[in-house]
Length: 143
Image 1 (spheres, rainbow, N blue to C red):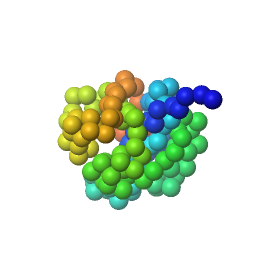
Image 2: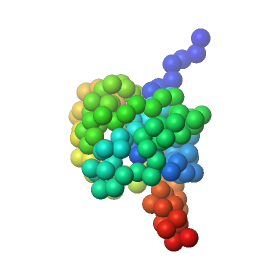
Image 3: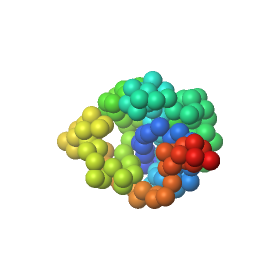
């Protein structure tokens, strides 16, 4: 009987799934079983001021089709990720290194003490340069 793999929490919009997303999810999977907290359509409109290209259900189906994703849960807390993190009970929260120069703790509504109290590690995975949903959308409008 094998050892239990760590549970990984990561969250995001994952609109127009692209190679950068895939590289990130693969790296997360190398560490443990990946549970994606997927932003709702309503939260994306509130946060970004525009709707995603793909609906929640379409983005969820795409992620569930990815061999590196064990499960998808809705990010029901919006800007406050704590309720979903507590639901998932991960060993690690994993984010892209593009967040290393931004205030990730403020963005997510928690601090290091909150993570420490729950024995949750925070891991940064290198960001894939040269590809993003924003860049793909720009190609579509400039094509």
